[in-house]
Structure formats: structure tokens, C-alpha cells
Image (tube, rainbow, N blue to C red):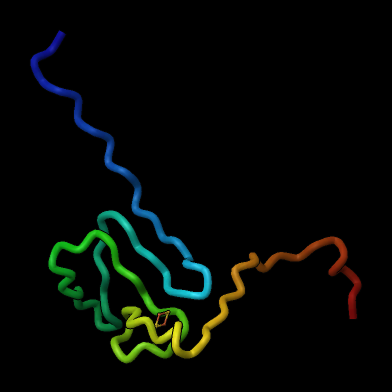
Length: 87
Ligand code: FES
């Protein structure tokens, strides 16, 4: 038996597509701008990223999706047997 407590297994970072809303990042991550500069998230472990394109605070969600009535299409794009041969 050892004197040290077991190290907790870190929970994986998750990305959740919120229905008719943003992408929710939860966990430990670094968010970089197009120049590779890291956003200062001030220790936040949950961040909402805009996917409606209407936020005035890109890349973050500012809830503009509610005002604009953003409707997400959360069905996975996949090809089915029914698609084959369709013209
Ligand atoms: S998803 Fe919320 S402002 Fe775009």
C-alpha cells in the first residue's frame, strides 16, 4: 500500500454543438487566433464559440444567434445507400 492518493484521471475536453446555438468547449484547451496568438481566457474552462456568424465578438458567442433565429442543422452529413445513383 502506498502513501500517495491516486492521481485523478483528467476528464477529456469536450466540444458540444448546442442546438440552434454555439459550440461549447469544456475542459482544458488553448484557443488560438488565425495568427497563432492565444486568446486570454482568464482561466475559463467553458467557452462558447459562435457558429451562426452574427456575433460581434468573434470567435465567441454573444447570443446574437437568439435574436437572428439561427437554426442549426445538427444532422450528420452522411451518404446512404439511397443516395447512390441519385441524379
Ligand atoms: S452562435 Fe451565438 S452569436 Fe453566433
